[in-house]
Amino acid sequence: MKDKKEIKRVVVVTDCKDVAFNEMRWYILKECQKNGWTNVEIELVPVHEFSIINAAFITRLMGEHCSPGTVLSLVINPLKNRFSRIYGRLSNGVIFFGANTGAFDWLFQDFDIEELYEIHDPGFISFGGKHVHAPNIAKLVMETPFSEIGKKFPKKALTNLEIKDGTVVHIDNFGLIKIKGKAPNIKDGTKVKIFKNGKYILDAEYADRMMSRDDKEWILYKGSSLDGLPELGTVRYKEGCKDIEAKIGDIISWDILK
Image (cartoon, rainbow, N blue to C red):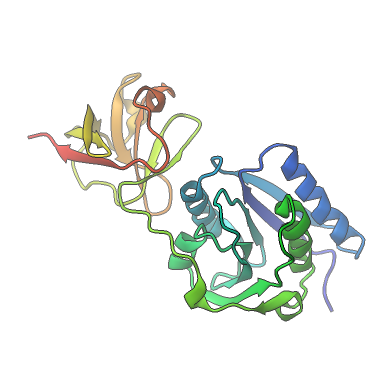
């Protein structure tokens, strides 16, 4: 027998960061509550507007932290085409739901898909996050069998998203630039030339701890995300990313100064 008092968690990764999120949240809660599921927690994880790359990074990041049984809902589609809405279960027990835009690709590369389905296409409905995603998320929260929600979806039909090493995947509220790839294996204090999209923009230093450096100094360092993605930023000055007009999708590279 299902325990309806057990805490059920939903993590919504979306660029719908205003009242749209509240609408989605309350839709899910009402659907669950009227069926006796009253202990549901829903949190927002915002992503940069219209950015599939940022959504892919954030989804991968949260997929690592979510506990088994958590429903990871992805609501973002800035693309012209409509995509199948897919759902299923990962090898770590996390349940996912969202459009097959490629934003799940990074997550799927690092966690095996144990089950994969798609909902029956309801056709275009304005604000699908509320009218399509939310009711199906509620069903997943209430542990509705996957086969009762939709039909199996072939893995070969999943949309791939190529994110090259060096790609800016996130810029946080401190202006720190997270870069896909491995941090350089160099000594603290090594000077480097930084390039954006192949064009030289500035000199920086590599540091083991960037906060030990002077204000506004440009530092390249091993960050905290995933396996230590490289990060670039200015110390205690969040406008550095704006000064160099960095944006998600740019390619950052570096050469060691001899």
